[in-house]
Figure 1 (tube, rainbow, N blue to C red):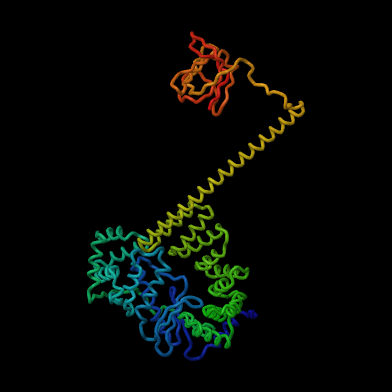
Figure 2: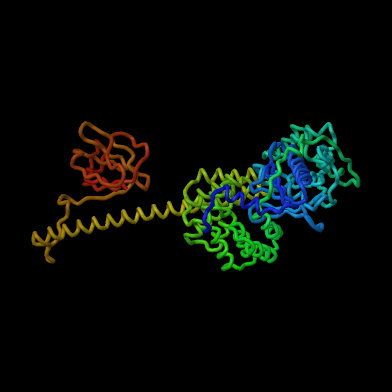
Length: 563
């Protein structure tokens, strides 16, 4: 790493390196940086035009300050005319603006979509986001005068575009269409917003807009823009280290990786820099030259000034290594409003709790990403955070840009919830079976211990000889048996009578002279309570036949077994 010098010494060296004539200058406002060597006037006017466009688009969707996550650097053409473009480069978006001309409508459409993507909380329903980008892509800016309404190509003239166009060129409805678009930009329902703004139904106004879109000519409307004085923009000299990297940055923004590598290598030969290594590493990675890309990007990781994009790319090239993990973590700290480091870090997490934490950070920074909400819901479900998962599904539905997308999300949520409940039910039944198996095992072990103890006791007492005859537990007269339903117990003083309904429809009545001498056994509540049973119970009885005509009993009960 180069030895650090005092700030004043570095500044003096940089200023001394600036060419005396044709020096590069730049000016900043909002997300835009305009840089050129063609003179300050053009820089200021270009920056004012960009701010007028940003303000008009923001006004159309009810946002005072549209923003971008990454800065947009606009390079004014210094040579032969070339096609304008807008692409992601080394340290943010980079755009090319031909000198003394207006970029194409497609360029402004891309810029509009970028501003909406990074500023709106959700996707506008029914394709209105594309429609409003098409409508404002043709905005003509002449100082503070804005002219709206030049029609885009016929293929883009949807009924949504026609609705915006028709109601914006009309001064009487311009304010209300902005209210409608503001509601949609904040996730509002189209039908409800339409009724509130115009007291019209969708079917009615959609058909009218389709007829309007089929026209061959369209009116325009002019109004005063924002009070932006180009002279208020401060011009600063561009650092030579930045100027050297512009050719490589432009090629990288166009995804012309081979050209970009050549441009960065040329700049590094003139004077190496960490930023140059970052651009070179990104371009090499774009070509698939992994080892060379790693070599360049490791130079970025050794310097505190290394950029977030280079650090994240280093982590992606060799995931799973500690060096990569630290690089991704540093990228998130370098650019805390950028969701990509958290998204990538989540893919490297095996555990659902940590994955859910990282994805939650990501959706906070990229709240329009439906796919991230789905991933978050899955991770939260796996982590047992079921209430949080439901919230994530609802958020995904809320930010989805179409009714079809919302319906598909709701179906995927239903399938995911069904699968979770099925898995939980399977786990519950498995757990219950394991508990039953454990109880059965304990019972068998207890029975085995009892038998072992009985056998030991028998052996100690001499045991049962093979010639010995087992003794019955009952040594009285022979008993009779019967099965039926115990209907009631009649209590007479200390004695009792059982009334049993037999299967053949007859009734068996048995006396119990002394209830303490009757064996009562069986499952559940095996007791003899006086009175009529609310729910007759099945019983098996053994009794000594002994008829008593006066009491109408057939014998005396000896044993009652509830079944």
